[in-house]
Structures are given as C-alpha cells and as structure tokens.
Amino acid sequence: MNRLLEKIGYGMGDMSSNMFWKVFSYYLPIFYSDIFGLSLAQTASLMFVTRVWDTVSDPMMGVIADRTQTRWGKYRPYLLWFALPFAVAGVLLFTTPDWGPSGKVAWAYFTYLLMMTVYTGINVPYASMLGVLTHDSDEKTVFSSYRMFFAYGGSFIALFAWEPLCDFFASHPLFGSSDLAAGAWQGAMTVIAVCCLLLFIGSFLLTREHVRSPKSAGLGSDFKALVTNLPWWIITGGALCTNLFNTVRGATVAYYFKYYIGEQASIHLGGWSFLFFAGLFLAVGEVCNMAGVITAVPLSRRLGKKSTFIASSVFLAVLSVAFFYVPVCNGGFIAMLLLQVAISLLTGIVSPLVWSMYADVAEYSRAVHGTSSTALIFSSGSMAQKFGGAIAGSALLVLFDAFGLVPNAAAQSETAILGMKLTMSYIPAAIAVVMAALLYVYPLTSREMARITDAEE
Image (cartoon, rainbow, N blue to C red; front, side, top):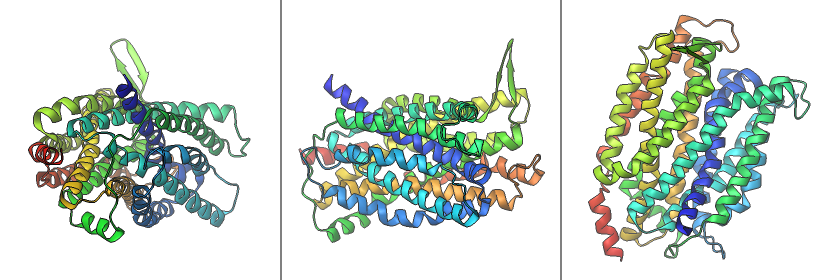
C-alpha cells in the first residue's frame, strides 16, 4: 500500500508540472500575440532567446541537486522549497501590465526567464527522483507510467478548464484589470497555480528516496562521463523530438480553430450535437495520452522499450500525414477527433518510455563510469523538453509570419491556412521519422539492462 501511495505521490509532481507546461506550450504563443500585444516576430524571438539561459541553468541545477544532502534526500526537498515560487511565477507570466510597448517586452522577458528558471529548480530534481526510487528497470517504467498518467490527467484538467475559466473571469474579474481579456487569462492561471502548489506539496509528502546513489565525483569527471555516454546523446535527441512533435501540433491548435475551423464549429452525430473547439480537441488528446501511458507498461515488457518507441514513431508519422487531407466539414471534424485519439494514444505510449530510458542511462553511467550524476543526466531531459517547446513555439510563429498569418484578422489568406495545415501534419510527421531513426541505434535493450542490473547486485 505504501508503494502504491508513493507511485501516486510521484505522479502528483508531474501532474502539477504538466498543468503549467501544457498551458504554456499551447496557449502562451497566442496569449502573447493576441492578448499581451507582442508581434509574431517578437514572440518568436522571446521564446527562442530565453532558451540560451536553459543551456546553463538546467545542467547547473543538475550539478547542485546531485551534491545536495539533507535528511529528506538529494532531490525530494526541492519539491517543497520551490512549490510556492513555481505557482507565483506562473501567475506573473500571464500578467499583462498597463505599460508601453518597450516596458511590456521587458516584462515578458523577465517573467518568462523567471518561470523557466523556477521550472528548472523544481523539475530537474523531480525528474531525477526516478533514478533513486528503485533499481529495477521495469519498475522504473511503472513509476514513469504513473508519472505520465497523472501528468496527462493534469493536462486534461488544465486544457479543458482553461477556456471556461477565462470566460468566467471575463465576467467576474479577479484583479480588476482594465483589459478584461488580460485579466481573465491572469485569473485562470491563478486557479491553475493554486492547484499546482498543492500537488507539489502532496508529492513531497508521499514519496521517499530508497536508492543510495554513490558519492558524486568531481564536476569534470561528471561532465566527461556525460559527453562520452552514447545512450544519453541518443535519448536526449529522442526527447527533443517528442517535445518538438507535441508542441508543434499543440501550439497550432488554438490558431487552427480560431482562424481555420472557426470558434463556433459543431459536430453532429446521430441526434447529438456538441461544440467542436480547441479545448475539447486538446482535452480528448490528454485522455487518450493517459490510455497510452497505461498501454506502455505491458507493451514495453513484451516488445522492449526500444522497439515500442520505434513502432510508435512510425505510426505517428503516418497518422500525421493523414491529418493534412481531412476536410473542414462535419465528417472531417469526426475524422480529426479520431486521428487525435490515435495520435495521442501513441504519444502517451512514448512519453513514459523517455523518462524510464533516462533512468536506464543513469544506471548505465553508474555501471560504466562509477559516478553518480543522476540529476545531471535528467537535467538534459528537462532541457530537451524546454528546448523542444521553445524551438517549436518560436519556429511555429516564424512560419506563421512567413505564411502571412495576421493576428486577430477576421479572415486569413489561403497561404496562412496552408501554413497551419502543414504544422498539424507534414511537419510533425517529419519529426516522428527522425525520432524513429534515432531510437534505431539506441543500444540499451532490455537484455543489456538486465545484464547491467545483475552485475550491480
């Protein structure tokens, strides 16, 4: 029973993170361009330039966490220490000051950098906990699956509730903003932030660190072990691609519905009729992600993590291409939902495998190099997540700008529509192909991990 509570507690941590992360990934670009008042080019630059800091902050946090010693463990205390700053930074990120253009740009850079720094401070240690919860490779996949199941549950809640929350706070302003839309978005994020604060505290209370990792070697030795770790390079490339895939599609959805499908679209099925909107489309995806996570454990045990990852990537490429040819009509809307279901099932299978494979890479590093750099290894996963999101988000906006999309325009050109269709189909398909190619050369098969674990015991 205690072990089950621990898995639930571990899942609560990523439930908190993902409630923020999915809102950032899918709604922050359109918030900056349509609510905050930045141009597409300014937003693209903001999301890309701030990632330079992550190349320093993520590995720095990994080094710090690896060398932390408290009565609560190495990594777990950061869940408690950073929970409140995490919530506050999220609210500030969705705050629109009544300043001039230059002041607003400066505020956007400050709050975005602050949010990503705090996100690093809590998420690098949180992810690293997977390496000290258990030695067993299959058990790591189970913990990782709990993590991703709760993560997608949090995403579902946040995405499905986001537009209703914004509508509620537009009618009942929380902060008395002169701009109702800006105040509504800030109010919605405040609700999400309180939930995230409570979830991280719960995660801290329910988890424990069971594996005593060896003492960290010198910083130079840790970095040398990292850069000579071939499986680390491969899985980091795979993690980057998964986040590119998810963010390119996800961040397109708000634009896709607003400017292509229309905000008042409906699906008619038999005698039933219901609104077809961005929040519903994304929330359906999150539920199916959760189903995919459940499937990941038996599939990876039967086929191996590597083969499961490759097969899922190939199917993702095929289904993404199919999305391009779906028409805008009632039958097309149903087809879009079915494709979203299938694609989300597959991304749900892949997600826990990424983090479980990072834990395997850490185990491999301990066996080969004899150094404990668990958080340094996992920091690359956090960095890949943020880089994937930032590169996808900024590239998406640059592409939309090049294709002639005009924020808040009543109608968009055929070229702008084509750009949105490509970012929902062929572009993520190409990313999935790269993902499959990378994992094809990944060396840590189930047999190899069993050999490493047996040698350590």
